[in-house]
Length: 115
Length: 116
Image (cartoon, rainbow over all chains, first blue to last red; front, top):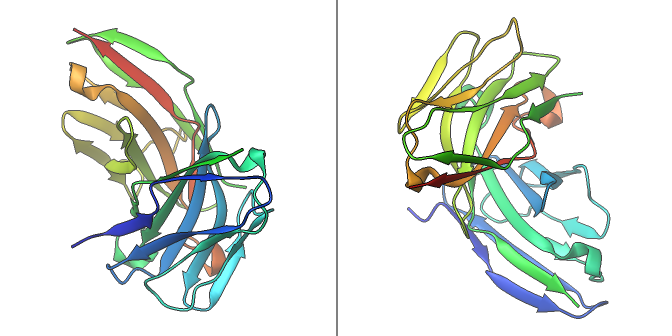
């Protein structure tokens, strides 16, 4: 059971470049989300999805796009990378409430540097 | 809206010392509460959870009790080890209806360093 798989683990981009961070889960979870982690800021929610075809914005959505065409996959797209997007990105998935408290399972993270 | 306030770090302790990391929350409904741990270079892992008032979550010697009257979920361990050095995050899950179902709200994290 692989859980939540994120790729790549490390990435360096030049300002203005675009890229997609991949996230896949094999637990048939309805809920998936993307967070960024910055020093002293904790985890901040970028976008989330409550099921295939349904996405919504979190706290810091600007500069990012998502889509959810399948239950398993939830890619995060950086449209035009900026140095302010240098961060560690985590994907997470979870069951709905009626399966016991919506515990989230996290990927290993993607460390992104924008130069 | 929902939020979590967590004791700021860093926290530095000697091995076998007692640990408390304070966490309080604000929520409109009846959230579930969690502590997650992040070891260096890794993602977050669930440490323990509590889904209703007065529940006590426990794991690996860590404990936390869901106190509705004080809106708190403080993390404690009686005797820390060097291997407990990590960042600890308090979080709550919105158990309400609609599109926010399942959303997690995190505190800012507390860095714990344990010296031998």
